[in-house]
Image 1 (cartoon, one colour):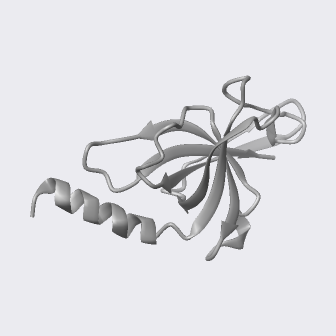
Image 2 (cartoon, one colour; image 1 turned 45 degrees about the horizontal axis):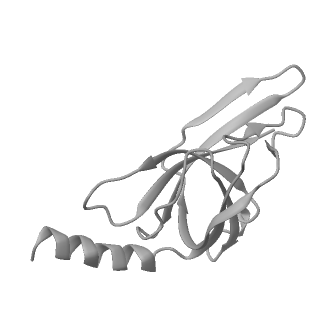
Image 3 (spheres, helix red, strand yellow; image 1 turned 30 degrees about the vertical axis):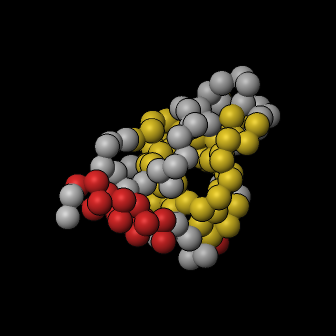
Length: 134
């Protein structure tokens, strides 16, 4: 079996693991900021660049905490996988989790893309994302 054939088969298998759904939007304002009063992403969502299946993972316990003037903010890291056919993504796009079969606690979370991981033989487009919460 060639590397290409193996990668294409792997992409089919990876998509079967994408049991969550999300909407990815791009703001004309660029990279979002965190509203320090609420801990939520600030600004208007913008235009939709993808809506469909995804897989959400928390790769490890890389949680960062910092203090603002009046409260503590926690930043959690996630990896969101979408099909390889989704190619029009950018750093700063916002991933909104709209449904999750196995973890209803993910629904309603807004994550922003901080890196787009790639490779010629990868099985899914992996998005390094962050979420801030107070």
